[in-house]
Amino acid sequence: MTEPSQVLIVGAGPVGLVTGIELLRRGVPVRVVDRSERPNPHSKAIALWPRGIEALARFGAADELHRRGVVLRAQNYHSQGRRVARLAFGGMRRTRYPYALSIPQQETEAVLRDVFQDLGGVIEFGTSLTGFSQDGEGVRAELETGSARRTTERFGWLVGCDGAHSTVRGGLGVPFRGSSYPQQFLLTDGPVRTSLAHDEVHYFMSGAGILVVVGLPGGSYRTFVSAAPDLRVDDATQAVQQAASERCPVPIELVGEQRTGVFRVHRKVVDRMRVGRVLLAGDAAHIHSPAGGQGLNTGIEDAASLAWRLAGVRAGRYRDEVLDRWESERLGVARAVVGDTDWQTRMWTMNGWRARARDAVLGVGGRSGVLNRVVVPRQAQLSLAYPGPRERVGRLRTGMRLPDVPLDAGRWLRDELDSTEPLLLFFPGVGKHRRDVGDLVEHHRKKHVGIRVTAPADTGERAHRLLGLVRPCAVLVRPDGAVVALRDPFGDEFELDQSVRELTGVAAEARWVG
Ligand SMILES: Cc1cc2nc3c(=O)[nH]c(=O)nc-3n(C[C@H](O)[C@H](O)[C@H](O)COP(=O)(O)OP(=O)(O)OC[C@H]3O[C@@H](n4cnc5c(N)ncnc54)[C@H](O)[C@@H]3O)c2cc1C
Image (spheres, rainbow, N blue to C red):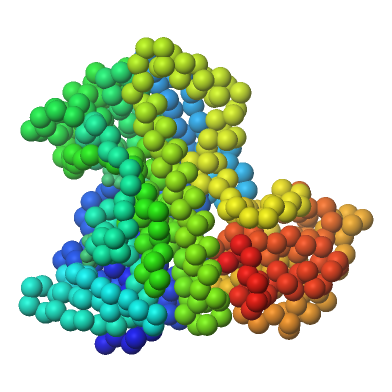
């Protein structure tokens, strides 16, 4: 059943599924086990941000997610009975998804399971990882199905996508450092009678606690409140209703059947995401407050940026240091996300002069457009850039995500990323600077194996303008969509080749690009 070079993925949550899909797309055999007997029935994460949607769109899941979800267009902050700031998502630029998609997590997981199974993947529900050991050649995993069947099997690699209480993290002895918030949090999902816009997020901040109201598919709402640590919750719906009525200046009435949850919130990050042949991704590596809806989105990117490297290392194309690069990049992102969500969570429940200062800052930020320009793209993870040597041409910078701009015939630039390979784009430039790049494309196609070389069709030069490109430019992009090199295509060919070799792992000296 198992071949020794197979990758074992522990956990069939969203992060395990994306890891499995991205590995299968690259021809890597995987086994996915989950200790639950059946798929997760809970709606936990409801916000998919543009970068997360883009990652899932790469394997064709976007249409189905949109069919099951509902678009959220703005985020409102209220305090002392009035709105202090409004963040409009529509101002997000260079993405075809300038909004958040509200979709319950069990729906997102169902879409991912379908993609995974269409690729031939099998999810082994009811199978737990109970222990493992590793050596230089692989990982020996102990798997238990029910209480009757225990096996020890050998794999090439193990990816722990097994959530906040990760067995894999425990087995590695990697500490999960951080702390917990004192409050408890309560949520209900269901029909609500209210005048609050259904396609927006509403935060009501007060010294008593936070109230968050968000539209869900089918016309219902998520209503989410914080509560005192010692509040005894016998009836979560009634407790949410009471807090909502106290904190919301407009009538809000939970009507009909509600799905409820009561939980605590933590902020914790590992200091290793890789130990030898064992990797940690998603909640197994970082957990934080649900403020801003970041956990699932961050985990999806962990998976997407891991899989192409792991596939390359396994195939012997990349040196395995590229996995250390993955670890340092993703730890940087995880720490930033934990910091941002912590700041937001503290902001929710400020009192006295702190609350007045917060409201003043939000008011100025909202009116001046700073929140729209800075906070929204950060929350959407669009402005997140990986560290490394900085090069800039027009609006393109190395380390950033490849922006998405319209091309000819209804195509978009990031459609070019649909393949599983790195991408080398040749932009011919505009006006008097424009040069024919056709021969260059042919030349580099022949020269570079395992890389997609193309010139985006942009006859109206609109994409050039949106990217700020005037002169011809060669843009090298990783399979996870990060820009790694910007070159003059008619300049030093050796330099361009060197960047390609570094990315495809052939170079003796790989830089940060891996
Ligand atoms: C109320 C709430 C609201 C949230 N809202 C948002 C939001 O709007 N946006 C957002 O991005 N994030 C949000 N999150 C966070 C999001 O739910 C998580 O980040 C996400 O579920 C992490 O996915 P994962 O695959 O890493 O882990 P999980 O979803 O926890 O999946 C882990 C899987 O591993 C399995 N497993 C565990 N141990 C073993 C073992 N030993 N052997 C085999 N299988 C095992 C489990 O059964 C489980 O299926 C929210 C969370 C909560 C609780």
